[in-house]
Length: 571
Image: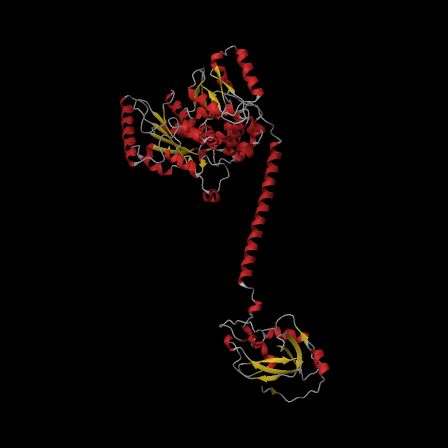
């Protein structure tokens, strides 16, 4: 192959030429700027020799000072190591980036394909702008880097969240040290503070309002506020309706306490509207105060227009959101009403403002009545009240207080009530089939109590083999003192001067049944067929719903597996 050499002006020995050669570990520069930087660092001792960064016949990238040669189009310069001179070789034309003009060998940086045989050019770039594929990070490595970056960010976020959570927990513990466990106030009647919402409701009805609608989350005091407003206006016990379709008409105002179903149909709306119209006519005929009070949960905004349609005029209706109307002073006074001890010990609860899953009044009620919750600390409890309530019931079920828990189950499926002088057989069926026995100390306690009251008769108790494996036969006693010994004062209120008791709030009913259903789902279906409608708070377990649902507190629902869901639907 013919070489186009310039006239040889230098007579240099092969040894000196070899000494000037340097093998690079990286490819030669593809731009003039980088080329000039490399040239400035390479000292050519003979002025007639020009700096080259070029490929040699061993496919190495080398730097050398040598006299340049002319290179024809579609050819590339190459250094021949054995003969110590430059030659030209055909360019790989499949790359479509071969030189299309004649050029000097020291300007090879303009044509990267001559410096890197794996070079894939960008067709929108030419000359100095072209970049080698070896200098571009491969896509898989870019993806790996992005994934690693996200993993690092995720780990960093987790660490930060854990640090913040630990800091907050320590801060709460520090503040809790200021408030030792409080004395319980086991009042038969729940305390009530006349809040700003109460005053506004009374004023509205006294000025001729026809329909007062109290809205709020679970445990926000809707029922108690409705009762107090009612009694304040007409000075008589309220009549409370729990089903909007089955109530009887009379000549007195009514309270519809969560009586409107979330899935109420248009036909049912018309029926209810007609009955309310007749009720207003009756109240007018007998000269009574013409008003009704309706309570709605916060998630029933779709029913607001329907409620407004029950009154003749728009101004005759008032909606009050109890959570939004709750002032700082209301919060303090509500909390103060539950305690006889130093209020400063629980002042943090009044300022927590964490009623995401349960209303503030019920948070105060639960916290004031249960020692276990007081040991948790006010702020911690107020953040996740349903979680702590559920955990407490689980501990009851798994401990010597198992029978106390089962009594709560019975009450939950018996309209939240029990008459200890006449409990029905369902209570004892639940105790026999779901209890895992009592400890020796617990049995001794019950026996001692029976002996001390001298009310135990032999025929009142009988032995039943326990369904739990590994437990001893257990005595189930059907007398008043035994049943009374199972009452949990933290969650049960006695009806004044009677032998009847009721659960303190429906949140207790719901969480008790959720825990019971977790352990005894078949029994829940069996005992609730006629006593409790389970629709609405039993859901099929969904991994994706749990993954994407943000829930700081336990959800008031029982999640069941596929087989249990099939059993539930067939029930």
